[in-house]
Length: 355
Image 1 (spheres, rainbow, N blue to C red):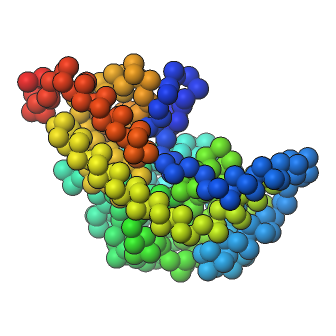
Image 2: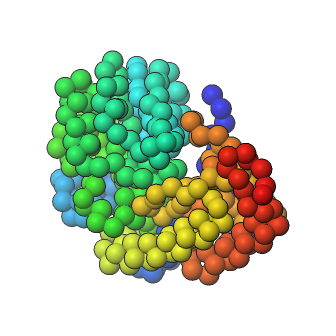
Image 3: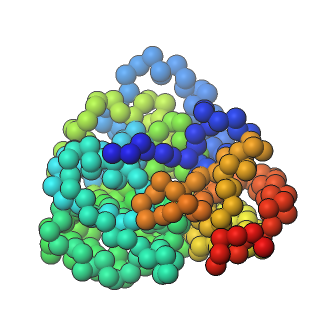
């Protein structure tokens, strides 16, 4: 099993500007900061093992029963707990997609098949995947998908749910980036079937990556109990629980974020295209593109970190992902890229040579 690589590795690099981690550029909402600062003393206490108040807040926010919620130490923690609970023997994964699904499945000796997304189809999932939904115990989908950032249409999600139900396949839909999508309700997966699990996180939209907080939704309350009782106790700290309750008071913050990210994403996309990079459609808080320049190395010399996507399955060298950051940071990145492109010349994608 290859070593897992993620964005946000500012600890082993000399970095001033991190475009590799897809966290809300507006930062942590002020009421979360206040809550954390005013309640630091509860670090001396064991946290509520059942996350009672946090589940109540999520229940109100998501309009689901507290019995259908499981909280965890980020979405990644819940991915491992799901796999440990279900003990699937076979799995189907998209390629490329978030690597922690694969790592969790391999940890529990699950055999994995891969549905390769076609570059000619812009790495977009289509109905062909339905033909692969057999002899499989679990399917992970990421919507929007990471690292591409494209969406799965809701009619296709419904077809996948129906097929998974008929084939007794558990479907896990990771919606951790969906809050960045305009009209996200159009793409949300409904909690309508006991074999469907939806993953959510505070990490991205509320910029709480260091606090580690996520949750899942499932209509099967007995399965929720099993997942909650799997893994380590006290997986969610008391500070994280309070921060989560405070975070869910910020519906207006989410709307503000969507507007801000959309404006800045369009700014970045326009300039990347002007540089001759191949930019893919994205609806989240990051952009996925291709260039034959060794862009991660060149930018790191300027203390700017981006995500090289060459460790994703079904991707080769030349694919990169950048987070949408603040207006000031985005402008700095573009100015730096202008100098790099000027120095190296425009890339001819047919030959891979400078022209």
